Structure formats: C-alpha cells, structure tokens
Length: 414
Image (cartoon, rainbow, N blue to C red):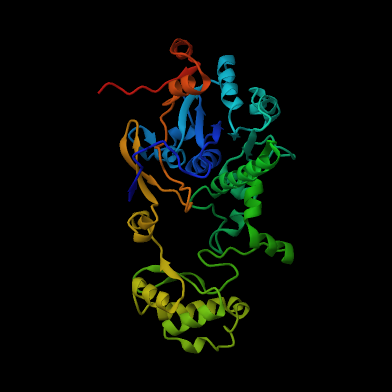
C-alpha cells in the first residue's frame, strides 16, 4: 500500500495546468471529474450549501460522517459550497468558468440553462470552454427530458436482458456500470475536445448519456441480435459465445477458467487429465463446443472436483491457460498484484485523518496519475477558492457566508 506524496495537492499528471469546474453529483459525473483530477487537472467541485452531493447521504457504510459512496468517487477535488439559485452564487460560478478549461455537469437537461449556466451562455463568456453534459438519455430525442439513473439505463439498454442465469430474470450488475462507463465515455470525449482546442482554439459541447453508453457497450450482444433477430441468451457466469469460459466448481471452491481458443482448450484438457476431449468431434472447434456446452461442462466439472481451486489454478497457469479465483473484497485488497500496482493507497482527510481509498488504475511512465488528495468535505475549500481564484477579500467572503450564499467547512473544536 502506498501513501500520498509529501507534496500533497501538487499534481504531476498529464492534465496538470487545466482547471475543471465540476457541477456534478451522484456517480457518472463525479467519476468523470475524478478521472480528470487523477490525471492532474485542478477540479473544483461545487455543492449546494447545507445539502451537498446526494451520495453524502447514501449509506451505510459511513467512515465517521462521510459515506463510502461519496468517498469512492471524489478524490483529487477541491470542495466549494455555493448556492447557484442566488444571483451572487451564479456570478461566482461564472467567475470560476471565465478562466476554466472544462465544465462538467450532469443535471437533468435544461437545468443548467435555467440557472444561466448552459453551454451557449458559458461559451459567450469563455469561447474555449469544453462543456461536458452527462445525462440519462442525452440532450435530444423523445426521452431527453426524462430523469435517468443507472438502473433505468441498465434495464432500457438491454443490458439486463442479457445478464443473469438462463432460467432467471434479467439482472443488474453488482456495481453501477452505466454510471461508471458513462463517466469514462465523458472523459474520453473531453480529452478529444481538448485536442481539437489545441489545434483550433475552439471549445465545444460534448455529451455522454447512460442509455447511449450502455447500448454501445453491449458490443457482441448487439450484433447477436442484429444478425439473428434474437436476444442473446443469458448465460450466468459463462460466456454466451465462447466455451469453456466460465465458473467451475473445484473440490473446495468455485474458480474461473477461460479457454478462449482451441490451443487453450487443448491445454485445459491435458491439465485436467482428459486429453481425449481434444479430438472429440463434439468439441473440436468453439462452434462445436458451444453446440455441446452442457456435455463438455459436465465432463470438465467431474475432472475438476479432483483437486482444490488453488492447485488447479497453478497447474493451468503453468500450461498457459488463464484461470483464477473468485475473490472477496478482503482477498482483493490483500492480493499481491493489486498491492504491487498501487491500487490501495492512503491519503489525509480533513476530518477523518489517514484513510484508505482505491488507487488510480491508469499508469503513465512520464506523467503519473495519482491519488493526491482525499475527497473534500462540503465547503472545505470555499474560502480559499473565493480568495485565490475569484479574488474576493475576507470581508466579502464573510458577507456571503452570513447570507448563506456560500458555506465553509470549519473543523470542530476538539
């Protein structure tokens, strides 16, 4: 496990020098802005005074007063609490946008325009601004005005129809894949728009929606339908099209084996002591194995019950056949590979002290992405942002605080 660098708050990543004004909440938007912050951008997260991001209340679990959900997607951000419904609050937001590079928002379509913070309004102020709009259904089409959450998108995109056990009902994923992948899609769009601006000087509006993302994300399931006219069958913990590529029960525990081609299948058969299956006409090609899946799985599971999962994993990996355990979270965060890749780090939190959070999955050889700062408390950086970026003096800030236009977190007396 690694710790944040001594120069906490000083970025070294490829986006160092860029400023992001973050109007997002919940998951898709905050995940996008967290990725930008991981890569070195200065991210200023704006929350409503007295309320904050919805996910601050999404618990348990809580670490002290902070929800695990909020902590998961808000590292590497400065926090300001600002009432955008107030004229003075909106004016402060406009001051922040004037010298910013990127704006990210994930309100329902039309909300930012009503606040005076829509793309057309902001581009008049800052023509080079890259404005990322994240929504449930996009800014056009008959569903544009609908509210959208991850589960709605998982259902409407067809994702749930291809997920789950064959004889069961469609299932959601174990985490909010629609939100996370949409946040990633928005990040990709922002990076592309930055390159366009580097060449032309021109900013632009970019969009990512939950529905668009998950429809696009279904890849081979989409083509299964477009070619056959049928829904891809649900296959539980097995690949719908590649056999054998699934969970198997060893003597002690379930495990995963993925023999994705004929060579790997032959290696699997040799390891489990069933070389006769290699030339069995029912199993010679993936198409044959897919047509005779049940018979093959029965043969393999009988052989796999002779040894424990860990022993099989070692034997299969020695043969070059991909295999691995189905880990619990405790096993994940004690796994030597996870730890070696700095996927568990410690950072200093303003009220909680030293806390553990997941690390950054992107690796750069010259411009490291890193978890520098813990997620902010609501309004933790309000005063410093208003003073150092907006240019207000202490008297003006105190007046805004007294009026409830802004909120500043203060450390309780011990």
